Length: 462
Image (cartoon, rainbow, N blue to C red; front, side, top):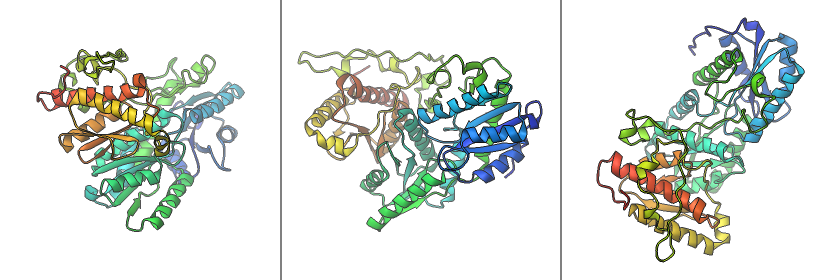
């Protein structure tokens, strides 16, 4: 691995310490050695699970052995809950209180950094499997924190763009839905019996082994299904460079009075003035990439960062929501205009919850179908997959484009050929989840018909 050496390491390399935090031991020993040689500083590993060194113990040992003036703590876990992130932050804040002469800095998780994407893309390439007839299944840890689960969806979309398989599914090992078995069933429903499983995790051997054991059980029950799991991520140049960049950025910010716009935390500036959801809360990046935007927003006009205003529901003479009369113009709901439509990810509903209340579920399906037909004139499929409503696109290109754009809006979505599927559940409320789904469908469909294809739209909205 050919890595450039660091050009500047603080005041002196021996005055700095880097602590990397992961869930459990994987290839962290080798990573510690590689980072230490690359950055020319001592590096200490810490873990959130198991009997290995905790974050507090790693900091204490590092201080005793190296007497650093600056300590940078970088979490390597992916898709972690806000609680996990905050727990580590509180440990580091307590260490700062104990050693006030040392400057501490707690960085944000690596997330969907380009280096992480490059590392995972290489894993897919090394699988030596053609993407033509295989589904890609990205498996995350799973959390009660929707933002953490949303990160898995974002990484899955970015990896799929590199791999270009016929189908993409997302699953979680615990807490969140769908589980691995359900996601594999969706792949089979799409006509694909070869599935490439990519665990979204870093140096987490325990969870990797859990995924492997679940796949073995599925293989024994379905021997005609080919399940291939990517190797556990080892020492990759993209990961090393990502950690190095975060470390260098942290050192730079230790000498300033405010953090950079990347959302990294300088404890000295903020630990006494903000509580557990304040300045140290990590923002999930908004992947409203320029390629998703209508042409008139691609570098030709300034873009507002203000949140999109919520439109009031409008009712017709029969007392039903007039979905095609709510918005004056979908261009006012521009994808370039601020953050995603929803602040948190609207996730799939477990089939057992749907089955427990069929009457409410049918009412939700009927309203979603009626609203989507009003704003798109596209055929709607309600009986193919429990907990999902399908929209028949005009072709596969349209389905792929809508899938990418809707994911950015924090709505779970999956695709089978030229049909996209959106979540539906018996507990969906008219002014909330139902409106969320119809709004993003209307919005993205308008972009496709009016701005992307340059053809007259079929929507009733101008």
